[in-house]
Length: 442
Image (cartoon, rainbow, N blue to C red; front, side, top):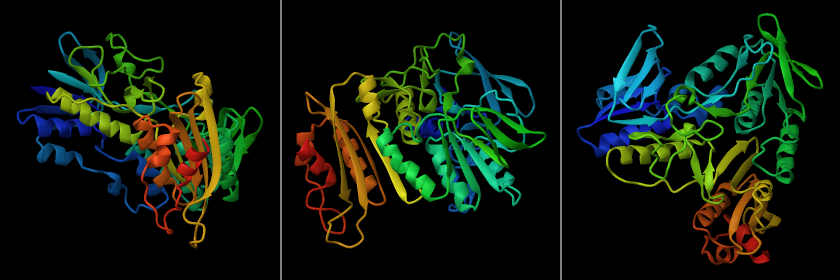
């Protein structure tokens, strides 16, 4: 059986290794557009500020490992341009030579990820304008961050924007963050996002909310960022305004995409075309609370979907059980966590819901060193099923977030949450965990 995988990062190589383990006779070809394989994108901000000392530390396996140890035809600098689903042929270009190539397949996986959104602003091609998605992007930013770069401007206040605001600030740079909406971290509700705004300002981040960038200024290198309200001098710009699924090459193939271009897949990661699968940031995810296909690109999801796609391609049927949008981020001294629906999403979906909010200690109040946790719990007004939650604080956020994600996965009610046997000792918790305190109130 000949397997072809388009994309050599999280989903693609998770699938490749699952195929390798499942089908001992597999012929595996991987077509990767970049030069690096199997790296952890989430570690890039910490490489840039030096907290992780070497970029190689976020690379799980080198391309040579897949070739020499696992016998894969692992290619780099190969961009796929078209797919003939009827004859089961992939067409592409070798980016180093410019030569075209074609590869036949028995089973095909699309794991092409997502591309950073780059608006067609005036000045977008100036030197000093960056995105952050690949190893090459990371090297470019690090090479560009010399002593002449005093002021950095970040466009976009999502997770990458926030993480990089901290990263640049720890390097001693002045940081301006411009967000088109009225809050950063739009996956949080505004009442919770205000805590993030306060942390940003406390750490010297120059927040500009409710401003839309209209262009960049400069001659050879970027010198300023123009918005609908002002112009800000800068020495470097990072665009962090979201991503779009890398699926443009699928136009005309007949494969079914969602309105934002992500490949529609079923629980077995199969697409609408025979023998073609998709996984990772280029594919849809079934949302367990919304009960619809969604698109929330996260590294955990990419690895899970890749493994499941590889297993199914190799004849071992597994199902992807869906997502909750669970995510966590470090932002200076705060940890920001959320899972399931926000209040805003519950409103948009017309769910009848109730909300509980509270401030609680991260562990027993009489034990030294406790920190305040800010918690928000959303649940169904009628069924009392949990719908989602948001937690922000300095300590203990991850512990509660993962408990809540598990409860959501199993469709628990607020009453059932109260009954769970959670761990307790004064250095770690109170007798009643903050989540269970909220469940009792509900």
